[in-house]
Length: 102
Image (cartoon, rainbow, N blue to C red; front, side, top):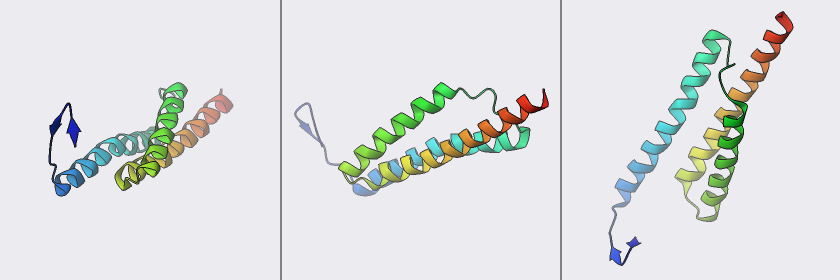
């Protein structure tokens, strides 16, 4: 890695740990949201705009990951998009039930 003229050597094991840790932390938030939504049967507080922006960012990161062939970026963002789609589907389903009941 070259940063401002300073060359740094980074151990590949450390990079693997860093990549996996980042992915686990990011995906944990989605898993918690799915669990909470399933338990309460409500995701009305989840912003549609948040979902759109996160999806767009994940698609861009996924594209970047494929270009640079980085399995951690691809895996994390593919899993993140999948979990985001689950949250979106749950939100739509619960919001429709709420409208139907009112």
